[in-house]
Image (tube, rainbow, N blue to C red; front, side):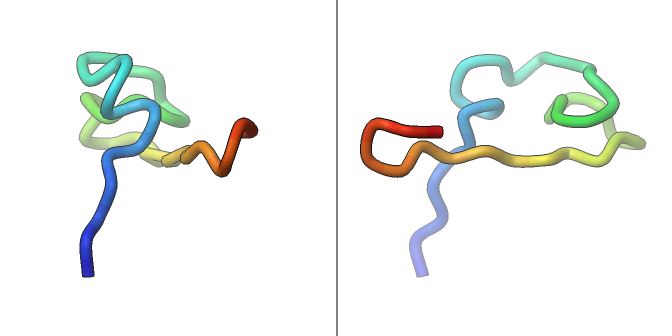
Length: 39
């Protein structure tokens, strides 16, 4: 199974946002992906 990088990991890997920041080890780390031309 190939796992894609999320939009957050691609465009803001150092973001420390509690909800979606990949750099926040205590956050929720919500991941978003584009599907066709929509997010």
